Figure 1 (tube, rainbow, N blue to C red):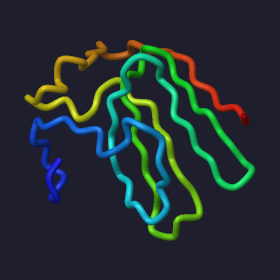
Figure 2: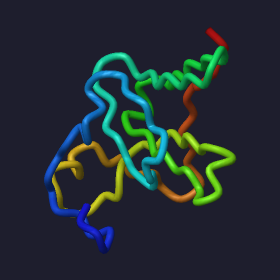
Figure 3: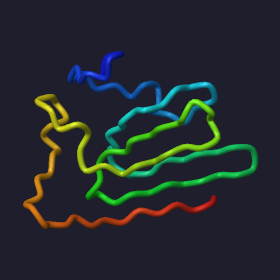
Length: 107
């Protein structure tokens, strides 16, 4: 995505191929999760592992400006537009449902 939130087709880890602090970082960002679909958060002594099943290969992360919360949203696709990511799109007929599992746990 460019600064105007227009998909560029470029895929990047944004420096998150290894754990690192997110303090001060802005997020309204989608991530494609490869292999194990887990996200880890840690703040002081509190640790959280967020997991989602393979029905949701993408994770949208949002931190509002006040930084008092974080939103982790499982996604079946990330903005299905004619980009490299569009191959993962799932199409549902009217009235159809898609279910999956997700959980969080303290470590």
